[in-house]
Image (cartoon, rainbow, N blue to C red; front, side):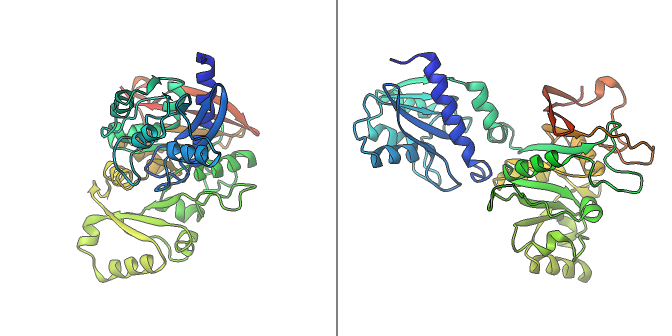
Length: 383
């Protein structure tokens, strides 16, 4: 016997398993699977990394290893509709049918046009009982970057800032270490490790010389995001920490395509220096003399960078908001007041003209992190 409560219990376990793949599944959704018979868990699995077995196959393999060969009365819980197309790995629907699973409970339909309901139809046609839409809100939230890419072709870009109570991100002399508290900084490292990439601009490299790696306490080898630097004219200092570690941590430098196509000797030399250091130079279309941010966002998404953390100063943060590529915001607000009109604020000097035209957050959450207040939510476009 099953109950709605049991469905939710096992689906939440599938979601918990799915999260284990954060930072490792690039371009693929996070998926967990649980095989249950008469209320007893027979096996679990999850999508461990891009190119590895999908969660359903992982769980079926685990069930076989544990000696469970008759699964006709078993129920497979999975947070995303099983795929029915040949990708990096074979379709999961075929394996589920061959395994003789009696019931499949899935959290949500796969937004991928190659699947989108076809996986469930295939399972139904094979005589498998289907229940869907269990914990759908949580399932959609977990795979928000994947859904956004499938629906818009854009990645999910989270603008992360640390500011004082009066909205300043540094003093008028540029000092910014450290506005946020130690707990907030540790949380940002965990956020990096769950992101496909960290995006910043040349201004931040020059001002802070950051590493932009994920250093998570208690984890000797946490997943590392790809570091992406927007540097239109390729002026990144050769001695920067980013270039010094580019062989160790994948680094992409986005430059103006027209400058690459008409490169002089000096620009070619800087390109050679960057590539020899281990960085990839990525030519991107320009707009008004700067990198076209929408073009860059689409390029990155098409290369599998679906969840991107934007850690930038007010110039790039402002430009990203105006370009419409930011869909989420996370702000760490410290209980300090910096003051001064000359001190840089969160989003520069190009803002809303009216209150109605301001960017607004919805599904907003507020919480404490150490001594800081964290405000996060999904961005609504200005009216």
